[in-house]
Image (cartoon, rainbow, N blue to C red; front, top):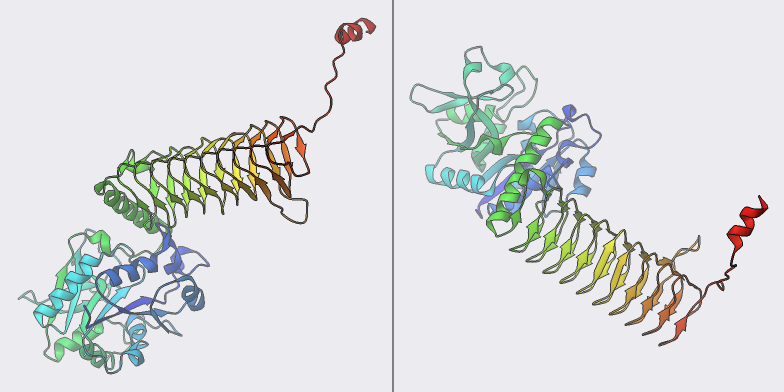
Length: 457
């Protein structure tokens, strides 16, 4: 596909979305819909992609991290006018120009590659991707003559009552001979119901010049569904998520309930892992083989090693090692690293901390801004008091230390290797290696106190 350049039309406002966000930036499977179109073009072998932006142009440009060229359509005067804006970037370019829509996130690389291949093989000046649909309302209709050859395309608002009965539609995706495209664009005018420069008018001009128009009919019309409102956005999301889950299952991942599991497109999961219902895995997550995730867990931008279990928990922007157990009901916040064989139990919150190999934080604890060594046991109810109201400070716990239940470690503080902190202690000073630290009030017992108090009443 080295002789093909794509022009992706992404200038529209998307009024029916009823949003301040440009339409092409609405997310599907963790990415703006425009990213899915760019990705399809790149995977189809197209190395040069030009995106035409207009409404919210700078917002779109800043949000898309992709190696594309940008061109701005100052006024939205139609699809033909949008393609014209890319003309200066393509002067002297020989080869194909693939025109795509930025709001068709379900289009696949295979479909685009097939369209380009068919175009090259046929020698047509333009090849149109078409679809047959049950309800063609709103779409341009493909006009064919008695021999079945394409004569042109008529937009819905300009179609006659007879033409409205045609159910073969224009998907808005074309592969043009570059010279034919820009020659035709010079001839079009806004003499139509919309007062716009239609790209579809180029096809009629190409036909009048005696050149041929080819078509490729797509098998699954869902691929070319345009997103115009939130209902269609949800339909596309559901379809793409199903596609992602199928790919994972084919690669050896068990999805217990695909209808109740939500995994983004940039997630990778190793074979023999099991994903339980109600689980959300989003962003750039990497999960190793033989893991157990869920039920009802949420992972966002997380790296997980092999043989680890995360159930009924939230994990964000963290690294989880091998053979780690998290949950149930744990909250692992950004910047956390759990080394191999770590156990984090129920109702534990960990933030921006490193937990060493084989250490345990079994339940009901908060660990923040801490560095915990290997083989450490953190008792129930332990709190690292990392914030003094103006700044965060660090807690360091050495290897094989034992922190008794209901302890408060007031940072900055160091607990030495193999040190023991007695239950109920509030530690404000460093504890040396191998020492016992007990900081609590002396227990006092008053025998018979209850009886005496009752007698007085």
